Length: 158
Ligand SMILES: Cc1cc2nc3c(=O)[nH]c(=O)nc-3n(C[C@H](O)[C@H](O)[C@H](O)COP(=O)(O)OP(=O)(O)OC[C@H]3O[C@@H](n4cnc5c(N)ncnc54)[C@H](O)[C@@H]3O)c2cc1C
Image (cartoon, rainbow, N blue to C red; front, side, top):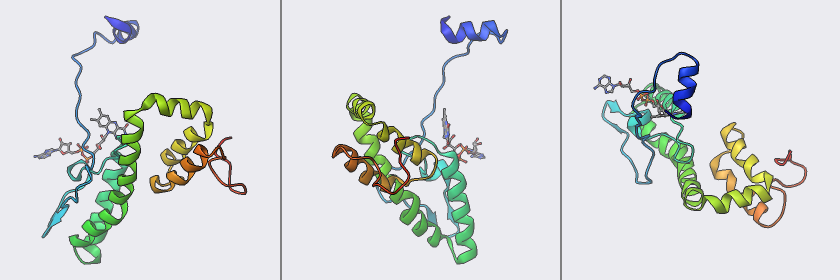
């Protein structure tokens, strides 16, 4: 039955059903066409999910908002341009980070153990305090044996 089954049984919630999963569509780096004439795709349909974290709820809301604003501002071509300049550009950094970390997780685990600031960098992205594009300067500093942020800025290591 396994731990999950035992947990459900303990709570009187029955037996586990069949495992199911679904793909989270993430951008693959190719320039996607997100709008044509009066139609646009947003959220998962636009493969707007974060390629590093797999999160897509915020991105779905964000892309929907951008599409609505573009309609007010003149047309859906603006939506496509703004998505490419914003979310898609940011996701190109997230995709690179995902390639590096998920291909060599042990290497990054060891780095994170030796430099707690590396974990904090990721938390800053999760909290929306740092863009993916801004993560490389912190990584470079850690690899040089420095604190992830220059002195004078809020420490990431605390
Ligand atoms: C297992 C799993 C866990 C996840 N966990 C997280 C998480 O922790 N945090 C996070 O941010 N993201 C998470 N995601 C991703 C997130 O759920 C999606 O990125 C997000 O829901 C996308 O929103 P959306 O509105 O684009 O699409 P959806 O939420 O999929 O909404 C699309 C809707 O359209 C409906 N629909 C489809 N075809 C038709 C049709 N022909 N006619 C009418 N209706 C139709 C569907 O039934 C659905 O209700 C997870 C995804 C999965 C699969």
